Amino acid sequence: MKKVFASLFVFVFIGLFAHNALAQDPQELSLGGSPISGNLSSGEEIWYSVQVAEPGILTIDALGEELDTYLEAYDAQRNLITEDDDGGEGTNARIEMFVAEGGTYLFKLRGYNDEVAGS
Image (cartoon, rainbow, N blue to C red; front, side, top):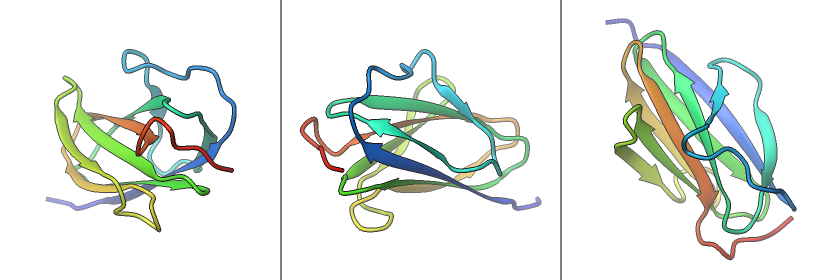
């Protein structure tokens, strides 16, 4: 089996932002694409999806400024696979997981609690 390492960085900056994508409508991310940036308001959850062509290790990093991020990973049927609080840099979340060929995975990004705020 060929192992592929894919890395995707999600940059998060606190700010005023209306409701983003819901679990039913996650934003699709492409492997090997450019890092994305966005705003995360207190109490907000942002959902992303990744479709995988080959099996390998997928890394999702959330890099917030003065923000304690939290990530959850789900399969296509929305079954929780794993979650992380401070596995990345500082208080940022990082998920590293094996992904199957042809799989679709969902990731929920949020603050550690509903009161998280910062610049």
